[in-house]
Image (cartoon, rainbow, N blue to C red; front, side):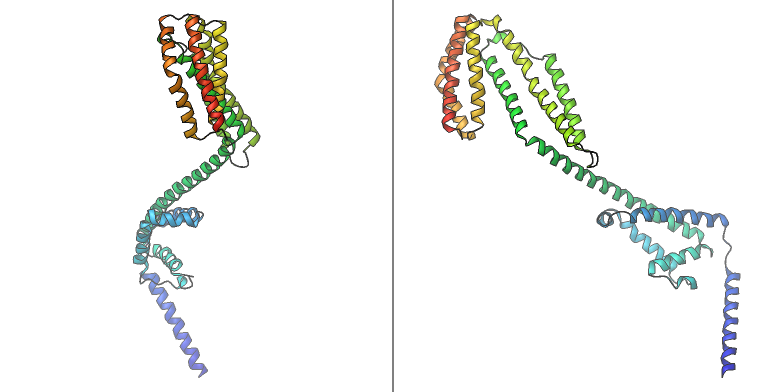
Length: 343
């Protein structure tokens, strides 16, 4: 019995050797250049696979839906090339994909190099498509994170009481400009406009803003909150100063339009009331503020128009003083109304 078993095993070994020799004899010749090209395309493909593996699962899943159609064709090509093929060294593969990859490498050495080259090249082009998608999504995600960080940091500054105070000062200066222009005759409409000093000031505001925002977008390891605070304050102080040149220019030219020392005192009184009116309006409801301002205009508008017409006809101190006194009365009325409604 033992002798029969030994003879059987010897026969099987002889058969396997004969089969191997037959297979080697039947193996088509493969161009060495093709084999080198296979190795080149394989290395390229494997490098792209590593890049894709380094991408987050969330991004890869999105790109599977957006740009991953070609991966189905990759699987179909691999199946077509490997179906029915057998190499004993591929039988120990852990999964189907690993087995098919093993079969592809062996096929390249058995007369199928060009087919393998084509497969790896197509797979690489598909992976490049996927990587473009993942890079785009990653860039978008990084931009979203940076924007959220920027907005959060900026909000911390813009919600500060200091900024609210500075913005109030800017608005008050604008209200003063609006008021003093309303007291001037039509001949003075063009004065103190397009001032170079204002243009230069706003350029400085823009420069400070860019520096401030550049600090806000820095990564956490580089972000300097104290530096951002300094840039923020510098920007705001400059912005407040931008409104002042126009007001200074107009008040400096009032002497050309009938202003004297007495009318200047009335002007300062009106400026004080305009500032108080703005601050009080911020402490009332929008509806109450609107009603108070409208009531003051309705009560004094007729007299203001009459005095303004007289002043336009003769831009002398007497008529300017009359006009400013009427404005003073109207502003005082509005302030008193707002005081009753202020929170």
